[in-house]
View (tube, rainbow, N blue to C red):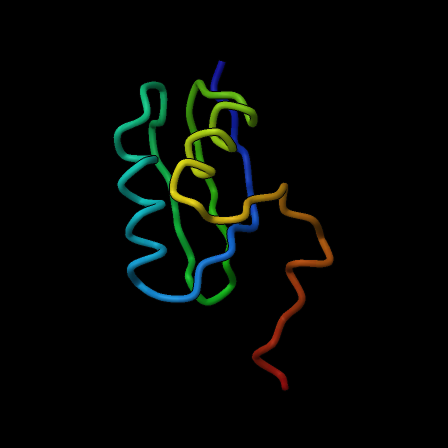
Length: 78
């Protein structure tokens, strides 16, 4: 079954987001992913569990937690 999981990942630069993209790209079961450096939002679609994705991203040394609605505030109006 295909799942969509969304996370907040502490990424400060393109090197950080690139590291996350590399580990997700190598994961078996990942069909697609989107890494947004500006919002620190990572969306993964595939036959993977939240725990599997957290473990993979944690290998990069980046802090990762489930995305919550409070993380999605629109900063474009500030």
